[in-house]
Image (cartoon, rainbow, N blue to C red; front, side, top):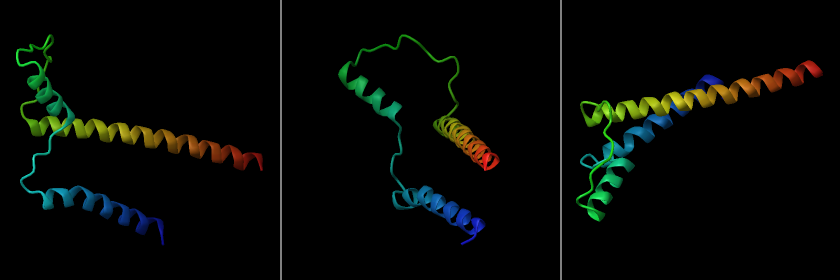
Length: 98
């Protein structure tokens, strides 16, 4: 199996993993840990007042999710690049020593 074929299979698997939950649970509420934590704090202490407010709040929940996903993608890309760089460097040094 060629590298291109492997990459295409992996991309299709990732797309299936992303689309399948949305297709199966069309009316599901996909919330994050922040929402759950806020809900739990409200139950435990209904009069709780936050001591700090954000400087800027995204205009909608979708924008907030987009920014979170972008942050995760950039972090994953950076980690992947870093691991690949050091692996390639180690391989290059091993080839020079032979």
